[in-house]
Length: 108
Image 1 (cartoon, rainbow, N blue to C red):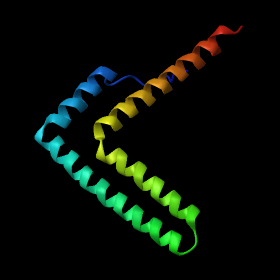
Image 2 (image 1 turned 180 degrees about the vertical axis):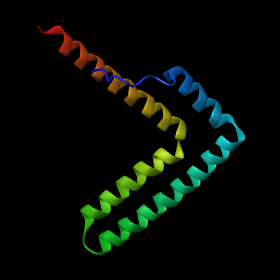
Image 3 (image 1 turned 90 degrees about the horizontal axis):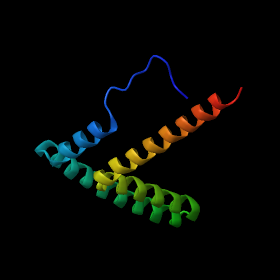
């Protein structure tokens, strides 16, 4: 499925190269360190929410809180993995749009 009027501003290779070079720059290293510290705080906060939720008799809510804290903390702690995940998802979405476009153009 093509969207008329929109053009590609930067190809995937350029974006990946830019992200890799940014993470090796001093500003990128500082951002990685800050995100790592925030990730640790989020996970600790999630553990305390889990303990509080179990104490209130809501283990399901407590477990959900811990899982989301671990998920967000993991994404912030390893930004390189997050960038690769975004790249994989964008590739998947691109393949889906291409297949929908091919199916739409195959009929009479």
